[in-house]
Amino acid sequence: MSFQFAYIPIGVPTFHLESAQKAFDDSVSLLQKIDPSVKVPDEMLLSLPKLGAFLDTLSPDFVIVQNVTFANAAYMSEVLRRFSCPVLLWTLREPVIDGGRLRLNSLTGAYSAANVMRACGRRFAYVFGAPAEESVQRRIAAAVAAARLKKQLRSLNLLQIGHTPEGFGFGRGLDAELLSLFGVNLKSIEARELIGRAKTYGDDEIQSYLDNARARIVGLDKTPEKNKLDFARLYKAYDSYVKENGIGAVSSRCWPDFFVDFGTPVCAVLAMLGDNGVPASCEADAYGALSMYIGQMLTGKPTFFGDPVSLDEGENTVTFWHCGTAACSLAREDTGAVCDVHCNRRIGPTLDFGCKAAPAVTVFRIGREPDGSCRFFVCGGEALDKPKQFNGTSIVVKTEGSSRAVVERSVKNGWEPHFVVAMADIREELLALANMLDIPVEAY
Image 1 (cartoon, one colour):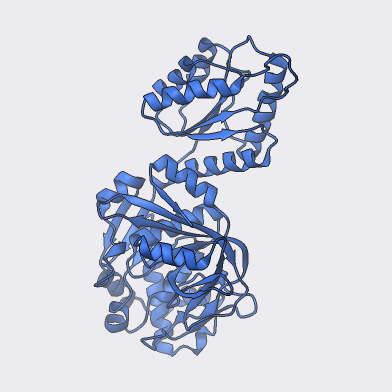
Image 2 (tube, one colour):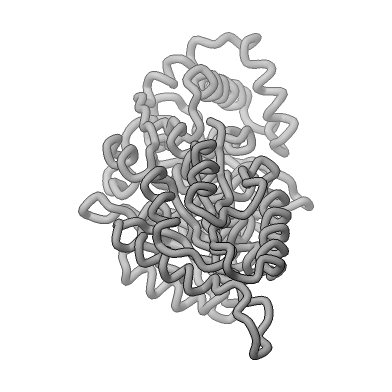
C-alpha cells in the first residue's frame, strides 16, 4: 500500500515574509531528506483559497501542519474537514528577538490550531522548534515512520497457529479486537494442519530448506538425522504457507504438540522465519507476534522475543530468555547461531546462543487489558556483550533507569511475561504510534 504524507505550511501575508520564506525552504529541505516523496506546495499557503487548492491535490495518510506564520483556526478547520488522517502540528521558533517586529508569531497560530482540534475531538502530535534542531528532526522522522507503520498494519495478515497453552491465555488474539485497534487481519489455522502438511514432503522436496538452514545454523548436522529432516519438513510447511497466504507475522503454538505429535520442535523454524522477514512468536502469543512485527518494521532488523528471567542490580540488567527461537542474525559473532536440544524436552534442533551487543535497544510489549483495550510497554537500554546465560537463547539488557524498578513496577502493573527487544532506540516512534492509535503508554 502506497503511503502519502504532506506538508501544509499555513499563514497570512502580514508577517515578515523573508523570515517565513527561509523557514519554509528549510522545512521543505528537511522533510524531503526524511522522505523524498513528501507532498509539498510550491509556495507558502498564505490564504484560505491557496490552502484549499493544495488540499485538493492530496489524499494523505499523514499531514504535518506548520504555522509558518500565525494563521487563525479557519485554516486548521479546513484541514480537519477534509482529512481524518493523523496530524502533526509544528510550531516554528521565533527567529529573532530584538525588541523589534514579531517576525512569525507561529506559536499563537499553534494555539489556535490546537484549540480547534480539541474542539473536534482530534488527537494530534506536536513539535516545537526550527528545522535545524536535532530534536525536531528526530521527532518528525519518528512521526513519519509511525504513520507509515500505522498504514502498514492495515494490510498485515497475522497468522495464529493453534491455541495458547493452558495458563498462557494472555497472548490469545481475538480477530475483532486486532482489527478494531490496529487494523490487523488475524488468520487462524490449527497446528495439526501444518504438521500434516510437513509429513507429506519427501527428502528431495526439502533439500533446499535444509541447505538454507545449514548456511545459518552452526552444528545443525549434529542433530539426529530424523529430527534434522523433520525440521526441514516443518520449515517448508511454514514457509510455503506464509508465502501462499501473504502472511506478515506468525504466532505459533509449540509445546506440547510438536514434541508429542511430530517428534521435532518448531523453535528453529520460527527463528528461520524471523530472519526471512516474518517475525514469529512461540506459545501462540498473537500480541507478542504483533509487537515483534512493529519492532522489526521500525528497525529493519529481527527482534528478540522472550521472558524476563533474571535481575542483576549490580550490573543494572534484566536478562530475557526463551527456549531457542531467536533469529540467527541476532547471534554473537564469536559463536554464530549454535543449535542444540530443547532445554526441557531434550529434543532438537533449537537455537542455543547469546545475542550480540547493541548500543541501544528498546524493550516493548503490546499489553492487552481485561476490557479488550491495549497499552504499550516501552523501556530503553543497551544490550551487553554477554554469552548465553541459560540453555536456549538470551539477551542481557542494561536498562536506562533502575532495572530493579523496571522489574518491580512492571510486575505490580500486571504485564504479560513475554517481551520484545528491538535492536535500536525506537521509543520516539512507539510514542508517536501510540498517540495515533489512542493507546496509553507505560514508559520505564
